[in-house]
Length: 534
Image (cartoon, rainbow, N blue to C red; front, side, top):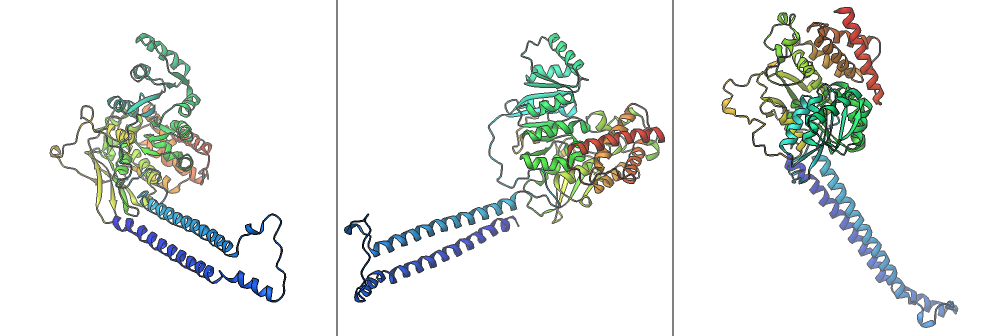
C-alpha cells in the first residue's frame, strides 16, 4: 500500500511533464514554420509598392541608411524573443508541476491520524532520522512534582543532550527546588509566592550556594511571564490541573514546543489550544505514558490505516475491590497505587478511573480519532501502555516497564531514540513475564467516571473543561477528608447535569477566558454539589 502511495504521484508528474513538453514542441514548430514562410514577405511588399509607384518612407533621422535594421533581422529578433519567452514559460510550468507533485507527496506522507485534525507530529520511514547534534534547551513547569523530578532525572542522565534553562514550583518543596537550582543552574526560576521566594533564598544560602542566582518570577503572572521569556526549545508542562493552561499558552505564543504531561491543558483548552499550535508552528509532544504509547505506535503508519485506539488502565488502587468495598475506601487506600509512582491527585484519578476517561478526551483531541473508536481496557500488569488497531485488524502495541521516565525521554529526544545504559531506566524482560498479560473490559457500574468523561467529550465545547475542573475540586475535597471516595462521581454527575440543564456549556469557545470561566464555574458547582449532597 505504501509503495502504491509513493508511486502514484510519480506517474502523474511524468504524465504532466510529457504533456507540457508536447505542447512546447508544437508551439516551437508553429513559430518555426511562421518564421520560414514569412521571411520574404517584407521584400515582396517593397517590390509591389515600387511597381505601384509608391514612394518608400524616408528613414528617420536617428538612423544612417547603413544602420537601418533589415526585415530579416527584425523577424529573427522577434523569433528569438518569442523563443525566449516560451522557454521561460516552459521552465515555470515544469517547476509548478514539480512543486505540486512534491506537495501532494508530502501531504500524503505527513501523518496517519484521521477523523479530525491531528495535533502531534507523525513521521514516515526515513523522515526525521538525521542525527541531531545540538543541545536541546528544556524548561520544566512543576519541577518538584512527579513529572518534574523524573524529567530532571533524564536531563541529568543525558546532560550532553539537554540543558535545563528554567524551573517552576509552587513552593511546597522549597528544599528540593534549591537542590535542583544548585544541580542544573537554570537561568530562570518561578515560585508561587514572595514567601516561597524568601524561603528559597534562605535555603540556597544555607546550602552554600554562591550564585549567580537565576532570574526569579513570582505568582501566576510571573509563571506566565517566565514561560514566555525563557530561552527554551521545549517546555515540559508538569503542573497539575488547569493552572498549567495559561503558561502553556504563553509558551506556545513564544514558539516553544510543548511536552504535554498536563492532561487538563488539552482536555479543557483543546478548542483554543489547537488553533494556537497551528498559528505559531509549534509541536505538541505527548509526555504521559498512554498518549506517548499511541504516538509511538503511529510512527510510520500510512494515512487512512488506523481503525481504533486502545488505551490501557491499571485499574488503580481498587481494581480488586468490589463496589461495596469501595464505599468504605479511605484516602490512604486510594493513594496505594499498585504499579505507578505518581502525585496524589492523579493517583486518586487512577482509583476512580477518571484519569482514563480524561485520557479518552485527550486522545480524541490529540489524534482526531472519533470517540466511538477509542476504548479503554483494564490491564493490571501495566506493561502494554496502549495500542493502535489497524484497518487490516493487526494491533501495534507499545510495551515497557511502568516508568514515566521512558515516555518523558522519548518526548524530549524526539525524533531520536537515545541509548540508555539501564542505570536509571529498567529494561523489559519478556521471559520474566511469567504471570502473563491480561486484559478485561472496564466495568462502568464500578467506575462511572469513565462514562461521564465520554458524555462530556461527546457534548464538546466547554463541557470537558467543566467536568475536569469539577473533578479537581471533588478530588481536593476527598483528599481533605470532606467527602467520601464514592461521592466523587456523584458530584461530577450533578455538575454535568446542571451545566446541561442551565445552558452553561459554550459550544464554540474561541478565547482562553472562555475556558477559564468554565473552569471556575465547574469548581464552584462541584463545591455546591458537595455541600448539598454529601
